Image (tube, rainbow, N blue to C red; front, side, top):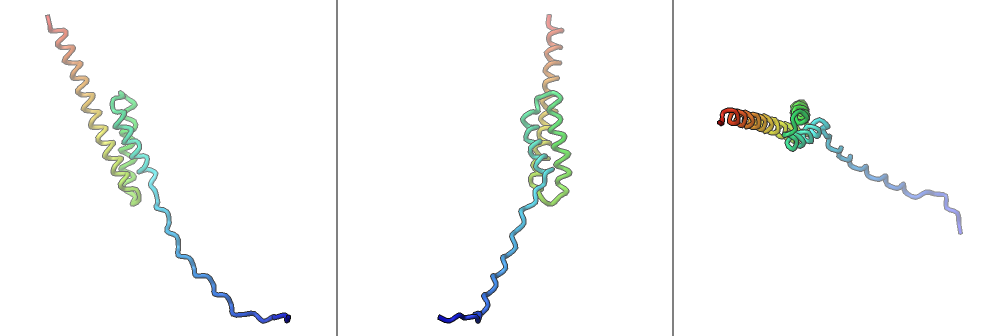
Length: 110
C-alpha cells in the first residue's frame, strides 16, 4: 500500500445561512398600557385605587402609540383605559345621585 500525499479537490464551502429574522420588537409601554387598561375595567368600582390603573394605562398607551412596534396593544390599552374612566365616572355619578335621592326622600318623607 502506498502513502498518498496528494490532496483531492477542495471541499466546497458551505452555503452561507440566510440571516435569521430578528425577533419582532415589543413595546413594553404598550404591554403595560394594555394590562393596566384591562385591570382598570375590572377595578372601576374601587374609590381611589381604581383611578391609578386607568390613568396610568391611558398615559402609557398614548406614549406607546408614538412608537411603531406594539401599536395595536397601545391602542387597546388606551381604549380599555378610556372605557374604564367613562364607566368609573358614570358609576360614581349614579351612586352619588342615588345617595342624594335617598337622603332627600328620607328627610322629606313624613
